[in-house]
Image (cartoon, rainbow, N blue to C red; front, side):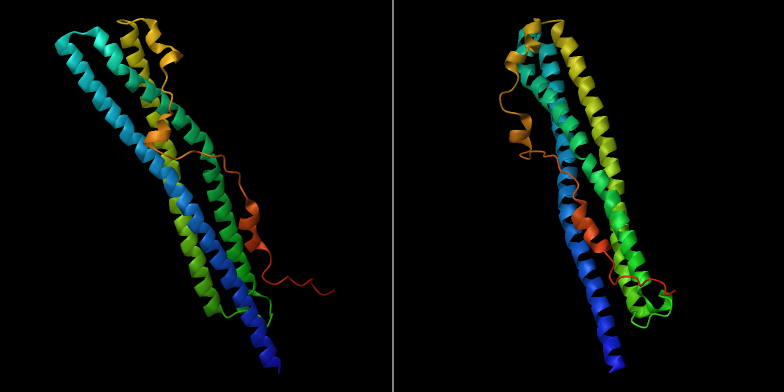
Length: 237
């Protein structure tokens, strides 16, 4: 009977650990989709800036050959407008995706705590507790959690690289926009730069189709795995 009770207790612990790992995997999948969407945004911005630079280069060459400053004004309008929109979108991207950086840290912390919990309920490290799981089973669980930690580290590294790219791209857009502004103001009226001809439809609406939303951290779901798998017993007096 004692062995049966012990086996049931061990099975209950293993089920709780398995459930906790499954929850973490599911949450990581949702997080990965959000992360991938944000990274894809930067790639779209890079492509758009590259296309606008090529279009501007062709326009300058065309104006140089034809010598028509008035044509430069009319045909450069959409380029200038789109550069301004991309700058705004990059600023929003940098602000709104700070939450992903925080969430990477929270997930790493959650996984470390989960590893500690597995170690605490393992036979070899639980101070003689007879209901602990075997070291073999614990090693399998620890391996799954370690894989998740390695994945979240890769995500963190790629996220940091994306922030660097976004910052550099924003600076590039600002320089192109400033150079174009000087070029146009020297040959056309300042009316070119007025708000009256800002694009009525934001660039993101027809280029990217994704609206940013502020995402607040919800640590509740991350921390639910951190509750004790089995409550630690108070040391006997």
